[in-house]
Structure formats: C-alpha cells, structure tokens
Image (cartoon, rainbow, N blue to C red; front, side):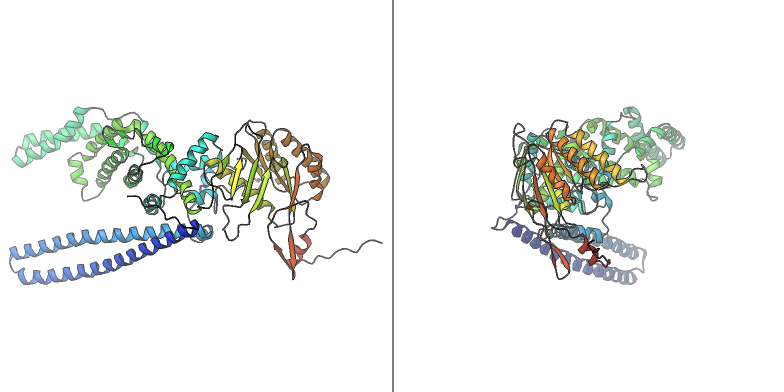
Length: 617
C-alpha cells in the first residue's frame, strides 16, 4: 500500500518533518542491524570453537570426525546465510539514511556544497550533455557542479538521464507540458515510490548503460540451430554416462564429438558473450527498477500510457530482464576457477550463449520500448522529486500561443539558491514593454536575476513547478549571453565569442516561437561609443522580430535605449548601501535607473589604493 506524505498547514515543514522522521527510523534500524551483525559475528566464532571442541571429543573415530566436520560446515553455512541477511538489511538501512539526508540537504539548500566537499562524481552532474554552443545551457548552470541537472536528476539509467537532459535543453509544446504537469502532480506526493527507487540508486555509483542493451537487443541472432543447442545439452550427459558405465570406446567418441562441437561453436559463442552489452549486476538492478514501476497503478494519461503493452509472452519487462540477468550470472560464474573445468566439460558457455540468443529472439524487439518508457518515467520522477521537496512551488499557467508573448511572475526566485538566501522579485515582461534594461552596481544581483528568470523558464518548459508564487507565460524559447568566454583552442576572444552568440540569438528570434533573450553586460568588451550603438541596434533588431527580454549594463548611457524603442521598454535597477566601509545589497528590483556606482568602494574594500583625481580648475 502506498503511503503518501502528510498534509499540514506548512507543506515545506511537513515534508522536512517526514524526512527527519524516516531518517530517524532508518537510523534506528541501522543501529539494530549493526548490533545484530556484531552478535552474529561473535556467535559464529563461539560456534566454531564449540564445534572444534566437540570434534576433539568425538573425533576419535572416523565416523565421529565426519559427523563433527559435517556439523561445523552446516553450522557455518546456516549462520553465514543469516549473517548475510543481517548485513544486507543493515546496508539497506544505511542507504535509506543517505537518501533522506540528501533530501534534507536539498530542502535546506546545502546540497551543492556538501556534494562538492564529498567529491561527488561527474556522472551526477550531467557534464556529458553540456554543449558550449548551446544558446543557454552554460549560461544558466544547466549542467555541472551545483547545477539544475544535479539538483533534479534521480534517473538510474542512461536513457533516463538523457531524457531529463533533453527536456531541460529544449522547450516542449504546450500540450506536452500540460501532460507532464499532470503526471508530475500525481507522482509528487508518492514518497514511498521515490524511497524504493532511491534505495536501488544508492547501491551503485554508476548509471545503467541502457543504450548498449538497446543496441544489443536490436542485433540479428547469431546462434540459430536448435539441433546444435540440443547436442550441446545431450553430449556432455552422454559422455558422462559412458564414462561411469565403463564404455571406454563410446566415451572417447562422444568426448571427441563434444570437443569438436565446442570448437565449431567457439567463435559465435564468444561473440555472444562479448557483445552481451550490460553486466548481470546492472541487469538485476534494471529489473528491480522496472519492478518498482510495474507495482504502481496510475491515473494520469501520461503514466497510464506506460502501463499498456508492457508484457511479452506472459512475462513483464522486469521478469524478462531478470531472466536475462540470471543467464549472464551463470555465464560469469563459468569464469570462477573452481567451476571452469565443470563448465567446459558440460559446454555451459555454449548452452547459455544459445539461451541468451533465444532470449534476444523472444524479447529483443520489446527492449527499446520498455527502456524508452522507463527513461520517460525516470525523467518525470526526477521532476516529481523536486516538486515533492518544494510543495510551495506552483506549476506555471500556460497561456495560448495565439496571445501576445509575455511573462508575468510574482515572487520569482532562483531555484538553485537556498530559500534563506533567495530574494524574490516580480516581473511583467511583454505587457509592460518588451525590453527591460537592468542597471546596477557590481554584485548587486543583475546576473542572478537573469539566471533566475531563465532557470524558471526551463523548469516551466520541462513540465516542472517553478520557484515563484505565481507564473503565467506564453510558450517561449530562451537565448542567453551571460557567461560567454574566450576560447584558446578556437582562437576566439571574449568579445568575438559574445557577438557570435548574439548573432545566433538574433537568428533564433526569427524561428517561430517567441524568444526570451537574457543578455548580461551586453557588449562590455568594446568602447562606450560602439557599445551604445551596437546595443541599441541589437535591442531593436530583437524586438522587431517579436522577441522580448532583459539586458543588464554598467553603462548608464545604455539605459536610454528603452526610450528610443517602439513599443518602449522599461528601466529597472538594483541598489547597494555602504555602511561602515562595507558594501551591502538587498537584491530588490526597483523601477528606474540606478543613480550610483560602487566600483571605487569595492576596490578600496579589497585594499587597492584608489584616490579621486583633483578637479581641474
């Protein structure tokens, strides 16, 4: 039975208390299992000592010694099985502790710092999806340390990670977004399901490489002959029977036939073993993930679609993958030195290679369907995990694409900042001008404001809740130039890289869906005269193409651009305060143009000797 998260007056407090309660419960279980582990270890030592003493007493005869050794082996075997169960239960409890502690870290906003201190592997950061030429991925901290992907991702398969990354990199159509929102809303309160999936994920350090499995399943079958498969099964048994019955000539004949068959099948068998794609342990883990999903019943249309046609020949996807995992496990056991001779005599490698090929012929066409559906579910579950840990974050309201492009938000904040440091502001872009020019001093919050808008638009376009009290928007795309850098390898300066990005953004504005541009310190790499002309022409070009967006600047001359446009834009600014020689910022967005700069004060605050030149007479 699924247990949903409790509903209280303060949803965030309720979730935090639920996490803390479950963390305390799993901690208590881990301690109990640890004590049981120690007791069992001591018990096994005492058991061995007692049985050795017994062997000394009754081992004067051969039968007594045999009885004592049997008791020792049986006792170690039975207590070993029990000990192993205790260790598995303890490790599961520890994984659950890690799962809920990580959730509390995300809620408290300390997840990025702790993952950096722990040296979390790059696989959790999605850096393989980062394209420096993408119109906003690098600018909006989509991938990498402390990124949106790292915050959201709970996918355990390669396909699930790729699906989530694709959703973040490109906006979906309005109907697709609404379908995802419905699915995420259904999964949002299901903490038990996320716990079960999280415990599977916590056991391993690497994601499951499902693309290799899909590729392998689609390949043609290499071993076809049922007659050869029957011979590989019957010949070893016949050879053994002739040996035990003393039929020397027949034994030699069947043994040679067996050797010839092994040599005949060696190449295709080795190809099957080599190309198997995924290790048995990964297959078991994949089967367990599928089993968790199959055990749920869903109501939303998007999730119910995943339930349809998920069986093949009477087996579910998890059962079929589990069967393949067992075949691979048997193959791997043949590499054990203790079983090598037995496996070779009975042609087990050949037999299991045939069994794997038969599995591929039976289930191969369904593998891609199963794994693509699982990948989509993992992406939805990742968004639902974020939604569950931020219950105050609403789903955005999607307006018709036929309406004029606009973004209206109340209390918009940056999702990657801790709630205690997240200062929220409002925005009405499109209804109150298609360009907002943001002026302000250094470190006052201009760049963070652009990123807050951009990241929330990414979440909205992926089907996730947003960090705002309310957000309404028409379908939009994003183009950003916030973190443009030079490239030594490509021989490109920062300024040239910036104008290349700006040219790409202008081209994006010509392609259908209205564009939201986010330009930080636009054209700061050139002189003020060229910057003024270039920024003005750029803003006019974008607005004329139906785009809307924001520019930030230190150059107050650029703030006059909004007065020259039709329709006119608006000026906003961030302020700073100098108190007792220290700069402070409230990160509140205010209308109008900033009236002061803090550059000289900042230079003095770090010890630079900056003096104001005397005024010429």
